[in-house]
Length: 302
Image (cartoon, rainbow, N blue to C red; front, side):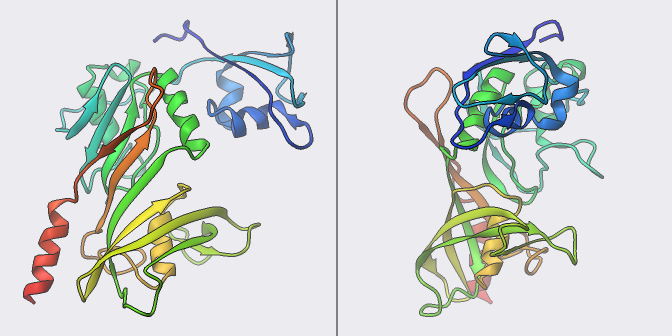
C-alpha cells in the first residue's frame, strides 16, 4: 500500500454525555488512530458533510467521516522461524515463543516477532506495516494474532477496545494455599506505574492514578509447592496478570520483576474473536508449553 492509497472511516457519533473534541473522539472511540498520530496522518475530516478541524466538537448523532495515510515502517525482515497456528489473507495467528519480543524497542532493534512476520509475508522494510494488534510480554508465550492489512488491523483492534475478545492464560504460581484464598474470584482495581521503580506497575483503588484492570482467576490444580491457575482478563493493561498475581500474594513462577527469576511461567492459552468476513467468533489455542511440564517434574524430584 502506498501513501496515495488513503484509508477511510465513517460512523454516526455515539456519545452518552457532553460533546467531545473530534480528535479525542477519534482516539477514544473509533479504534483507528491515536491522538498523537492525527496531525501527521489525517488527510481529510468532515462532520455532517462539512470540512472540520480537530479542535471542533462532535455531538451525539453527528456523521463523522475522515481519511488518513497508512502507517509505513522501515522494519528489517528477518528469517526467524514462526509457529503458525492459523493463516489466511487477512491474519496470521502465531504461538509466540518465550523470549521473543513482539516488536523492536530500546535495546532490541531486531529479532522480534514483527521482524519475523515481515520476512514471512515477503515484505520489504520500506513497505511493511507491523500489523501488531495486541501484545504479549517478551517472556510470555502463546497465542497472538497479527493483521496483514490496516483494514483488518482496525477491525480486530475495535474488538479488543470493546472488550469482545476472550483471552485465557495459564500460569504456575507460588503460595496458592487451600483455605487462604478463594478457589476462584475476581480482581477489580486500578493499575499504574510505580512511583518508586518506573519499570514496575502496581495496583490500588485510586481511579485517578491508574487504569481499571479486571481479572478473573480459577485454581485448576494444586501441586503443593506451586499451583496451576487459569486467568481470564477482561482488560489488557501492561503486566496486568503479573501485577494481579503478585497482588493476591501468589506471584507467577519465574517473574523476575514481581517475584523470583526462574523463567516466567505464563502462557497465552486461548484467544477467541471474530475474523473479518465471518459472523461467528473462532477460538485459537496453543497448548501448555514444555517448560511448564519440565518445571513440575523438577520440583517433584527435588
